[in-house]
Structure formats: structure tokens, C-alpha cells
Image 1 (cartoon, rainbow over the protein chains, first blue to last red):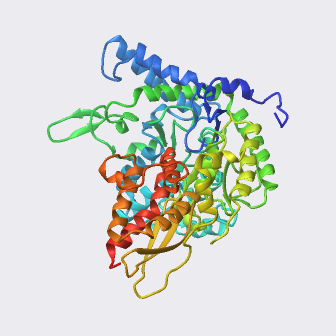
Image 2 (tube, each protein chain N blue to C red):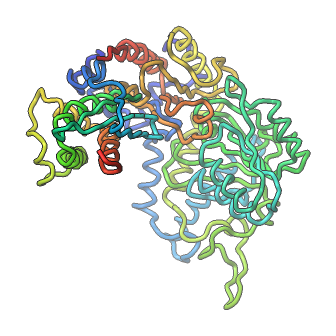
Image 3 (cartoon, each protein chain N blue to C red):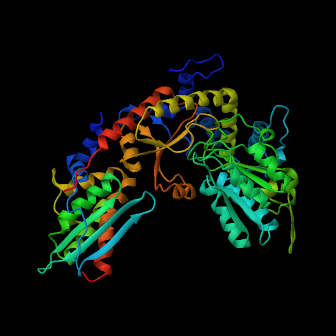
Length: 425
Length: 151
């Protein structure tokens, strides 16, 4: 360890043993996994929970009167409580009825878009997003605006790629009906001041949708601390859980007035020949057999993160961020997108290196067993504005070490010499 | 350490990347220009192609992109310059098939794999499936140029 572990810190070598994948080698070297913004790795306890359901309690939920189905239902529904507590500050203010299981962040945002947006938005209304949104919190709103003939407004960024306060004022004055905003940028790691922004937009009657896909596993957050927001969307697979499942949290009174998004089994209370009535929350929004095993896996992931301690995770990653930023400072020719100060940013570092193409760099790193993402990071609106087709992104999690950061930074340095060239004949 | 990349992609690709052949614009009334672009990674190639009086193609290019795309453009420019339009089109098809792991008659048009050969070096990119499109861009751009207009 290069920075001093405090008594309150995580024992990283022990934590890494919880993740079976780290026993593997790539190119004969240990895995240096720096693509956590894409998806996290999974602890054995989470994998075991899914296997246990399939091998011990496999049956459908909410249906059978027999023991297996009851066990499956209990296991599935208990995760709702876990997630509600996970999102509550101590005391527990989030209700289980406000937790809807979806297919992921994208599924959650699309649900709000189709159900809330289609029902309550009118021609000429304003929908606002920010320049730093992932496609999943940009395209659904852009297309909704087109369908509804609504105005689509983008809050632009400052030089260091934070929200521009002047732009926030401009859009606030338009009194948007919806503000869809990310908690943490998946390109720059910038963390937006959700609570203060939500308070201001609430005063003009805006419904606030927060994409927490990036923040959820890394910040010690709760709904209360995010201010008067209406919706929060996140994915299980970025927080040590399985793929294919995510969560939409919505304020109960808002969810209640929204129509169901998908029709089918489980979401009804009564079906007549000509009309039907809807089940209560949250089942109104969960049509069909859900992704039972993955929800159970998500529950185990929540348990895992809480055992490690979310404050400890945030604290450790903050230290790691400071460490990486200091390392990058001494690296000429490497352009870091976004703020170089460690405040209000997570451990996501997108770099562009003069003379080295992002894909060459990613392959160069891969040959050293270092997994990073190269490309546009599903953020075309930001990348186009920056005039960059692709960057190379390293994103860290609590199981990454300063040594891994060193390997990455050293490889960046060597790539510059390696790709230096070029004599045209 | 940094030789790993060179070991995998070989001296030939590195050489074409560092010292590209047939670089530059072609001028003239019978020159066809075609622009190839991959919006996902920003690779760009501008091809300039014309037919000589004996029917053999003359090809120059400029571009900007990753080392694989640029090396592929350079190798293609040398290889295709000796071919007729029809031969070039069947080479392009064979190269695409070969890079996408297909076998069969169309692929056999190409010279047999031989170590130390520039095309064989390009086939090494198949080891990185996501990079195959980088190698293919110059070839698909040439196909557009040859099919689209009177070369």
C-alpha cells in the first residue's frame, strides 16, 4: 500500500479474495481490471446466492401456494426491503412500495419516460438534460421530446466539464417539467451537486430524475441526501450484482398517479373482458415473471457492500482518486478529461494521448493484462462537443490498488514512446 | 516490456504505420476520391484512385486513425496498385472474408499465408475481433470507390 491505511479502511488484499475472477491471469499476468464504470466484478457470495436459489428454491414468485414458491417469493421480496434500507439514511425513510425492479438503469429511465412522460408532458413543455449524460439518460428524453413536440434543453458544461452555473440558471428560468441528470459522469467522474440543484428546480415544479448508475456502488448515498428528487435509477451489475436487473426508486405519490408501463401478469388486480384494474405498488410496474435469480443476487450484492461499509468504500476510493490524479499530473502529453482536482469527482479517468489512438492504447494495455474501455463511452453528446471520437478510460473500484494505478500510468507513459513516430515516405 | 505490442502485431505492421507507403493526394481529371470513416473510433481514410492506360490501378491515400487502420491502408495501397479494377474487387472481397474467418474459394485468390508477408501480418489482427473493422476500413472504402464511379 502506498498510502497509509487508516483503522477505518478496507483490507484490499482480503477483499480481492472475495472475487473469484482475480485468480485468473490474462497474458500470463494478474488481471488489472479498470473497467468498473462499464460493469463491476462479482463476489463469490453473490454468485452463490443465485446458485442457491436455482438449486434449492427454484419456483415462480407471487403465484404458488406451495413451499418452494413461498421460499422464492420471500427471497425475492426480501431484496426489496434490503434495497429500501440501502437507499435510506439511518431510520429508513424509503418504502418498499417505492422500489421497482427493472432490467437496469436503461429500463428504469425508459419506464419513467413512457409512463410519466407520455402521461403528463404536453406540447411546448421543457425537458432538460445535461451535456454529460450517458445515452441511457439522454436518448429516451430526446425521443420523448420529439414525440410530444416538447422543447429539449441541454445544460452545457464549463471548461473542466462540470455543470456550468450560468447554464443551470438559464434552464431553470425555463421552468422545465422534467430534469434528467446523472449523479456521476461515466466519462469524467464528475459528481453533480444533486441536492442543491434538486431544491432549486423543485421550486419551479420540475420532476427530477437521477441516473445513479455510476454513483451507486461508490458513494455513501441515500435518497434523503439527494434532496427533493422524484426518481432514482441504477443497475445491479455496476454494484457487484448480476446483469439484467436494476432498480427504479420513485416517490410513492408520483408512482401512484402513473399508469403501468407494461401489461400482463402480476401487474393486475382484476381482469374483465373489456377492462382491467391494476395491482398496487410496486407490482403495478412489474409485469410478467421477473428476473428472480438476479434480484436475489442483487440482494446479496447489497449485503456485501454494506458489510464492507459504504462510507469506507467512498473514503478509500477518494484516496485512490487523489493518488491517481497526482500520478497523472507528472505525465506530459496526457490530457485528462474533466477536473484534475479530487473534489466532487469519482475514480473515473478518461485520457487522450497526443499521437496515440485510443484503440491502439487499449490494445497496448490489454497486452499487459490491463482492462480499460476505449471509445465514446455511450456519451456521443459530450464527445462530439469535445471533438474527440474516442478516449481511453480507466475506472477504479474499491478492490483496485495503488499498485494497479501505477501499472496503468506506467503503461500510458510507455505507450507515448512506443507510438512516437512517424516518417512519411 | 513495450515490445509485447510489437511482438503481437509484428515488425511489418509497425513499419507500415511508421513509414506509410503511397501517402498523399492524387490529382487529375480521372482520379476518384472516396472518404471512409468509422464514427465509433474516428478512423478516417481518404483514397485517391485512378486507372493507368494498361488498366492497372494507381492508388494513394491520406488518413488519420489507429495503427492497424493506417498500416492496413498502406499495405493495401502497395498490393492493389498492381491489380486491375476487377482483380482488386475480388481481392477486397477475399480479404474481408479472410478477416472474418471465412474459408473457401473466394479466399484462395489471395496469396498463400507466408511468414514475413505483409498480408499475413494483417491477418494477425483477427486475434483481436474488435479491431478487425479497423483493418477493413481502407478496403471497404476502396470497394465503394471502385463500384461507385468510373475508375
